[in-house]
Amino acid sequence: MSFTVAIDGPAAAGKGTLSKAVAAHFGFAHLDTGLLYRAVGAKTLIGVPAVAAAEALVPEDLLADNLRTSDVAQAASKAAVIPEVRALLLDFQRAFARRAGGAVLDGRDIGTVICPKADVKLFVTASAEVRAERRYLELSGNGQDVTRDGVLADVKQRDARDRDRTTAPLVAADDAVIIDTSNLSIEDAIARAITEISAKTDARP
Ligand code: DC
Image (cartoon, rainbow, N blue to C red; front, side, top):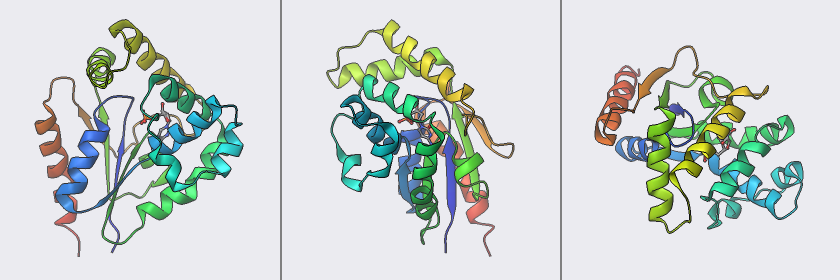
């Protein structure tokens, strides 16, 4: 039986950590849909048009080791504005969401467009400053040459582009539970998410 958890939110809100923890807790499969857009964005940086990159995307592309850089994140956000790119990535995401045994998908439009009937929808957010600080620590910890101001500007620019686009903008679904992690530890955020999901899994027939 399928059970879909949709986790959306802006850049660096903690969706990835939360999604992995939730998937491990319930034994669900996890798809970081941002990786699909990052893989397309990475191809555009070497001159492949975004639509052609999305058409030719193969699972191995998601394993490229440069997908976590700021340049690729920006390129992903730009490619994600193009409706054809989004349409090409739709079927893969929906098929993943329906897989037997349960699935967690995290992204920007999972609860609104990809899985509007998801069993649980969470919208994970935090202030831009808190998110930028977390992302700065992550990137600098990985040896990337970044500054706090640069990361904050990058996060704000991506937020604006992701929110203002016409197709599948970043917005909480009406029926999403909002989890603001600005003042929450990751452990508390995970516990909150597990409580929300357990309420629905326990109610299954
Ligand atoms: O989640 P992320 O930071 O890895 O995502 C990178 C970019 O991809 C993000 O700025 C916007 C785009 N994206 C999207 O438009 N829709 C999704 N479901 C996931 C990501």
